[in-house]
Image 1 (tube, rainbow, N blue to C red):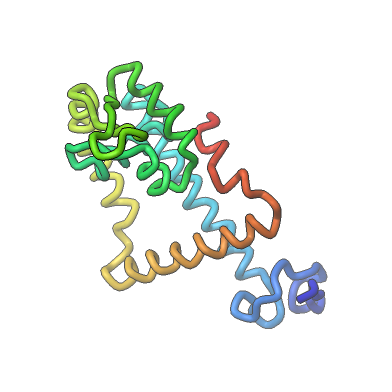
Image 2 (spheres, helix red, strand yellow):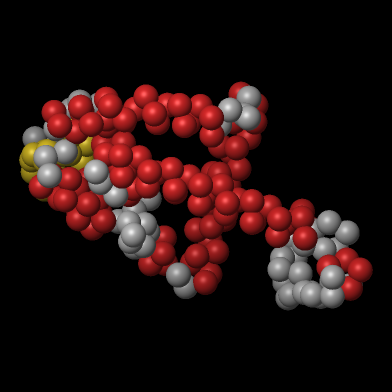
Length: 190
């Protein structure tokens, strides 16, 4: 589909930024643009809160996210680096680099995977567990406020929406030739 121009009355005289009928209203994309700006604001606020939790823990925001994933996936037994990378949709190199930093400061531990000698398992250290025990009450309060406007139905709809946007974003990134960005090379770049 080629880009089409909206009529001046439909889009203020400027071209529409999408041709998908579901995203247009009366031939204009103003509502869609508002949705994008609001979506980016929510993403920015989520990232700011992640960075806040990281600072409180003395680590970066991305390291905080990694730590939470290890807690969730490791379930006390440890989790393979590749599984953390897949869960967070980042590269193994990113997980290796950031987990190495957390290992050096004593927050994570790494040991050989007894089931697969080619991989390692990450676990929370005692220090990492204490750190999260102190942090989780605030995380819980923030999550309760952040998502307080959702009921069970809207939460399910939001999860479905995010799943669809994840797939659409993958297709858009491939189309734009921005594959490297899919691996969050800048995820921890602050």
